[in-house]
Image (cartoon, rainbow, N blue to C red; front, side, top):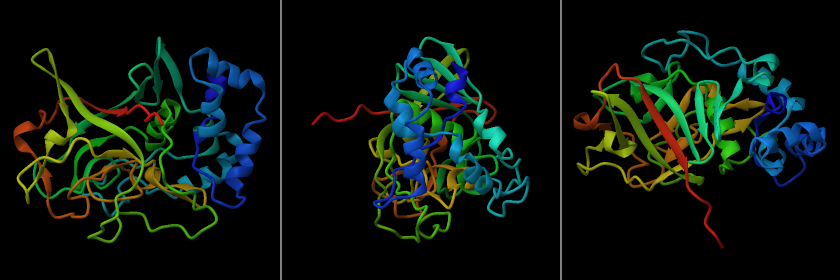
Amino acid sequence: MRACFEYIIFYRRGSAGASPWQDHLGRARLLPSHLTEGAQKIGFPKRALRLRVLIALWLGALGAGAQEAPAAGGNSNSSTGGAGPNPASIAALSNSPVQMLGPDIFQVGKVILDKKERAVRVPALLNKSQGPMEYFLVTTYGKTHESILKTDAEPYHIHIAMLLLGATGAQPDLTNGPPPAPGPIVNPSPEALPGDKITLEVSWQEDGKEIRRPASELISNEQTHSTPDAAHWVYNGSETAGGKFYAQMDGSLISLVTDPVALVNYTGIGHDNDQIWVPNTNRLPPRTAPLEVILKLAPKATP
């Protein structure tokens, strides 16, 4: 069963014309039957492999791009100079650790995928409890100077798990076009990124009991003195260009302001303003408590 997962990598929608992405997707459809059958036996439909993932044929290009990620302490955007991303090579990506933990429960790196609940759980810690924020969650090598939470989970593991749940995102494939400059769109921007509707929650243990809150309760809008609308989170899946998966390079995961590089974006009122968001100190978890950020994919709307 694990063999079928060793070929999983990122799927992005093909551009209008023929592109290398489409060519590799075509080859992916010719995978030996035992690979797709292995996935079907543990509950993932063949379509999920055909339409939402690329196989190792394209790993060389992606690996080369990902290797340009910042080294430890080399990200000028990080105030902590935390550990850099694990070196992304063909071997590292093609042997991505995926394990079955139980019925409908899988582990992708440090990320837990719950197929029945349509949820992905990401380990995290409280990062900052005061000051202006542009992100809710980044990696330890990401923009930790402006993020409420941080994680040492890999962005591509989160993306793989979301794709297996059925997320498609809405970012275009820019392989044949100029790569974007990583980071938020020039502020203020009225643009709200399209994507799959999700709910976001945070859970932790306190005095032997589980505390579980909507992520929006941990955030405050200083302009309106309210929390963001919990109904306006989307999984857009980050941008890719020239063989680079920008979320992996930049470490941006959940953004409060429009950022096509982040995996998740807030699209409600205030997404165009990077001056209004701060931690909601009355609802934050303890600083040292292990947290889980829970991304739950909303059911597809029926026609």
